[in-house]
Length: 134
Image (cartoon, rainbow, N blue to C red; front, side):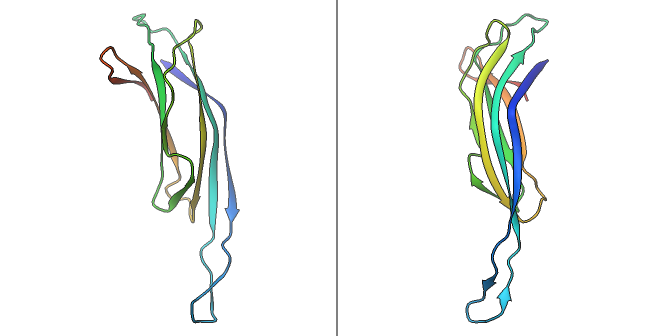
């Protein structure tokens, strides 16, 4: 069993209202829909590896995250997919990544709310990526 620990993971949202716009040749005011933004900030700090029954030593671990979101959402800032450096466990079984997370979105409704997916991989002796947890 693998355990991922998060440090300083937070999210915040704020409501942004668009100003009233005027049509090209009309004097009628048309209101555009209001929207809100969502910011995810923090870091993927570390993982603690518990010894496996087979006593197989796991080295060369890295974490990858991906954010998926619905059609009504737009990415304002940041990367929706990223990968950390390769790290080794210390004598206490802790692997440190300190992978920053800083993403901002905007939407007009909450349908398709962003979802964060995490996966941990290792590299085998042939240089291939091998999933170890998600």
